Length: 280
Image 1: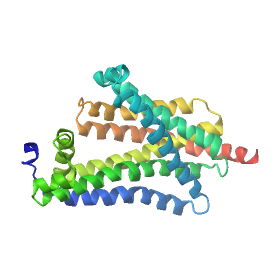
Image 2: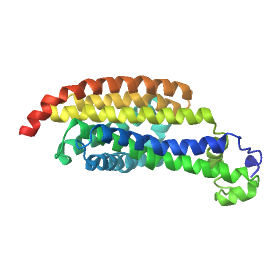
Image 3: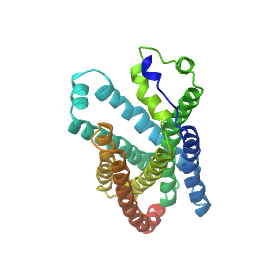
Image 4: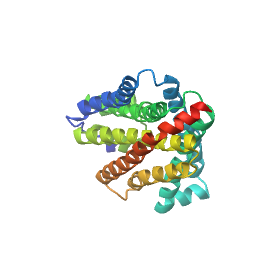
């Protein structure tokens, strides 16, 4: 497989990937420790678990099932979506917004009825964003680290055999291998920033949906869906090769600040609503 013969592992690849793996683990843990210590006795770990479970069911089971039908499977719908940038972006952002925000709404309104407080709502958001980091992002980083380590030995044939890359799968595997061996500290910084932004967005959107549940504000759920769609627009365009990666980070920072700002204002408004909720 001649396309792999010129693969060279950058000097920064392995250490940058190691640091990224450590930070991807540390970020959600740090959010959890900080919030639990700040609100000792006011938060329940069941809300963290509910947030993690809500993400896994809504995003990794239901949403991925929809993606299989509409993107991965070969049918007229998938061919139209994959062949049209506007359709791809609209579908991708709408699916993410609807599945994740409706999942939050269902869990917060119908399942997590005990200890329904704003502090626990934030803990739910930490669980939602944290499990995404640990179950989705972290494994891909670890796999990239394995690729970089295997190819750093210099024996391409042995590396291909170790990674089970065959002539049939070589063309599909090449971009992943190239990304792993060229990973640098700049990519590390972007991945860490993206995860911090994602945690802020997940927590903020959870607070917005929570405010709608405890305050019977019907506009909050569609508002959260719209905000989620807007935050995901540039990442979807990047996936189609329309935008550079740096623009995605700038866009993510903009919407993180906007969503967190809205969430903080709503968080401060919930004290009276929670008192009324607890009395009922």
